[in-house]
Amino acid sequence: MPLSIFSSEAARSFSPFRTILFAVVLLAALKSLIWFYRDTVFPIMPNRLNSIQSADRLDVSAVTIGASYNVDIDFGLLGLTHVPLWLPAADLFEAAEIFEQFLRRGGSPEYVFMVLDANQLYQDNGARQDFKAVNPAPRDAAYILTTSSSPFALIDGDIWGWMEANFLPPRKIPLSSNSRAFHAAVMNVLDPPGRSPWAQFEFPQLPDPAGVEEIQQVTDFIMRLVKVAVDQDPEILDRSIAALQRIAVLASGSKVELIVIAGAPFVPPYEDALDNATRAAGLSSIIDRDFALDRAIEALGNAGALVIPRSAVWDRDVDGKRLDWFADNRHLNAHGAEVFTRRLMPFLSLP
Image (cartoon, rainbow, N blue to C red):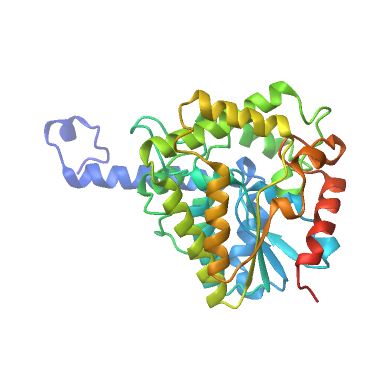
């Protein structure tokens, strides 16, 4: 029997068995390579992955789910021990699945926090314009977490995202090519980054948090996410609200208090740029961020969550101009997080 499907004999006599065997071996090799260097592509992975895998042994007061806006909360100031389960550019479907997997593994925090941005209500990282175009925010990191405890669990039925995460080299967010991701992995092995904003729970300070070029880059990225999702499903808001309700039910069923800050602090020029980009994309009739947050607040409140509207603790037109409180246009720095957290404290019933 020939050892290779590429032998002359195999070429003359096609064997489905050998073809399948070769495909299995190739995919297994690719998967082994991915697992070997995934932590260097995603500096977020060590603490998140360890938290999922040791959920039943974790002695922490709080976890955070969702996207990176959770860096606005200073848990040390709240007197809470905490582990992050949020991911960069995560949508609500990822947040719900990760939270469920954490609870299934025996996680039992007292609180789960989420800083909810209105754009997340119009975001689906499993959406694609066609089979050739992946979403600008691949689900590689989310699937690394969820498949660590449930190998075949799908995030909102996203089989394509599962296949990409399991059989292709991991990609960074914003999306980068496989060759660039591999290069980054090699460089991180040779010179491990001492600090990662995703892992360290803080972001590097920009000289100008309201810089026009940075705002444009972030706005373009967010609008690509939103436009792909809305084009594929104009009813994306309904599904996002259902994902929030799923999170609330999970929290209630596990006797975990869900605390949601509805709206994240941004510098006003960034919010203005998003509004302008929404109009330019012809999406104003579909995307209404204030309406979306109002629906989220109502749904979460009805499900028993503690919801704190951003307007209760943050004045966009006054606080948003305090650039010394911002690390960049959408994340607070340490001082800003302290201010923001102190304002949240009267709304929280903490020991």
